[in-house]
Length: 141
Image 1 (cartoon, rainbow, N blue to C red):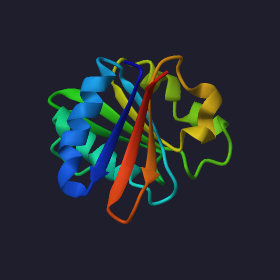
Image 2: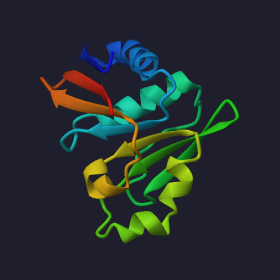
Image 3: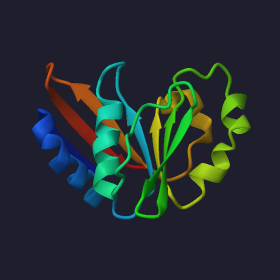
């Protein structure tokens, strides 16, 4: 199965959705999230990280570009490329070391670094249905 849709009708359904996403990923380590501003990318990443065992506060790395969290002794990387002005900034932070580390990477605003994305990843497109409802469209690339 290379595609899956999950409808989420409120924050109380996010934990179940995160578990379904990780089950769907079946070992894939790179997750790219596409959504409009305020569409819920960071909120979903918080739940995915929790599901992986992250207990610390998960927040958007808008200014630092990447945050690292601990998931039961394994690093989890969270990228936000919204503010980069030039693809060289991704090179400057050493994106390859993260993307090819074998550790989980969550990527917000992947369209800013499209040419640098690995060959395989899970794409999550978030469609805003209402203030509280989202449609998550997953694809294995």
